Image 1 (cartoon, rainbow, N blue to C red):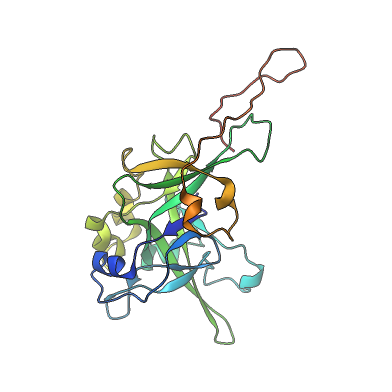
Image 2: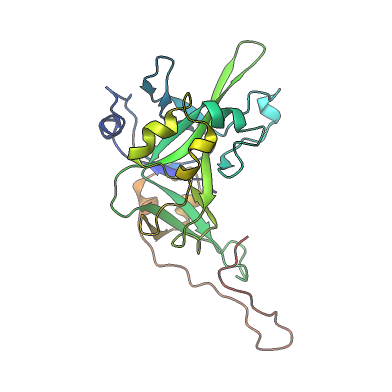
Length: 251
């Protein structure tokens, strides 16, 4: 899954990448979390690219009361075209979500401390902006109110990321932007080949501190490298101790 990410690129850098005349200014964001506004790039009514802010956590159009619905932060790319919550957006409202990287957490299954997770800042090795594949939906209430919301598509993790977590965001490369966003001429089956794990050498995973765990911590310090935790695991040295399991088993 992808539950936190960062976007520190400037509006000028984003406008250049997407060939937009301008993108409204915003500050660097180091710890973007669900329910917060996120920048998405999609095709507007005039067939031009637009970059709206939407709430992270998709609310399907058929939901009666968004207040009683669990927000959908991620969607599995393998089944999004079939699930009632995502299939309309997958067919008609695919988006790009620019990011500087994302965070993921690893915890050995046999660690004694249930809070003993290691956070990682996962970013492109060559730097720059990465674009997640996303979906956007507009919920309309009976009173005329509207909520624009979206989610990040995920896929199986590549060999480099899988020791940390078994899922990762779908990455759309610049050469594929047009095809991904062209929902008029491309059905979900036409873009399946784009929803594959990123190459193994695309990202680097940097161990960071527990500061990233708190949404309130949103400054550059949360991306500073730290020494990876040495997890204390149980070994079978006596009959009263449990048999150890593979250190890389994940919940």
